[in-house]
Length: 191
Image (tube, rainbow, N blue to C red):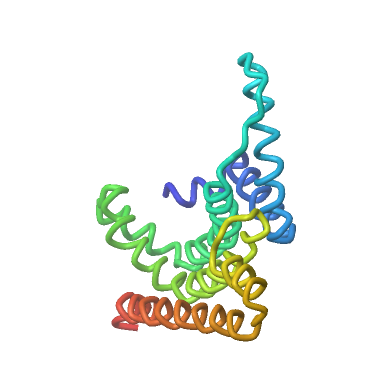
């Protein structure tokens, strides 16, 4: 009953609800700005406590990856929470009555059912996350949109490079959807 215990634990509930509410309630671009500019300030503040007086700049790739991960994690948390809550409580009780150890019934009974319910929504979160990576270009990190912007500016042919970026995003989306659809079919066998 670990998942149900976590859902009923007021402290974990407060942390989880605060995290998902704040991150989902703030625009993604603002979250990236807060991590990029606020992260440097926070690191410098901690460094001053330990006696360092110089300037510390955080790597743009690490900041971008963490901020996109935090944003995606907030949406994914809600997806998995909803999937776990959709599982019939009888499944938990039956696993306990049969004498399964918690680790066994989570891996063999609960998690496969949760994945079956969560995968369609997780694929949506993945598609949004894939497109949100274009927002990282504001930190100066060279990714697909930033490279398109630089190439369009230097060649004065924005239509070609932005169209190529759109095509590249479409290919990434198509390939990832194929993989996620196979996973959905795998976990939906028998239903």
